[in-house]
Length: 157
Image: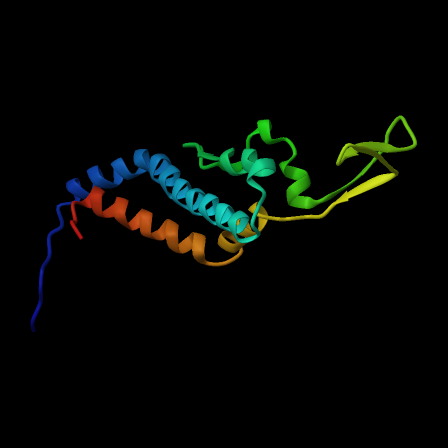
């Protein structure tokens, strides 16, 4: 009979796995930061692809933000300074609230209209869907997780 006896230094595993419990929130934060940075990059790419008007929409382009917390939550969006971004993303129908008409100055002439339709030009939602509704986010997070595990367990790859 052939037998192989293996002894495992479980004290080392306990130490490393114990560290894992405490390090998991910061690892999760790194994982979510990676995905959010890729979503921001894709959203900006979407804006460039539709040839956004820099004079009108630069606030949206520059005010994309994301953050992750150690409580396993993350957020990506546009800062309040670019409050009109929701109208660009989803479109809108603007009507006069207190008057019969909206008045705009166009080429030194005042034009009255009952309503204005702003067409939807989505840029953030397609980027979010591209990552979270496919396996791209999982792949990116797995890569970050593996890198952190390698650091934790001392493997250099």
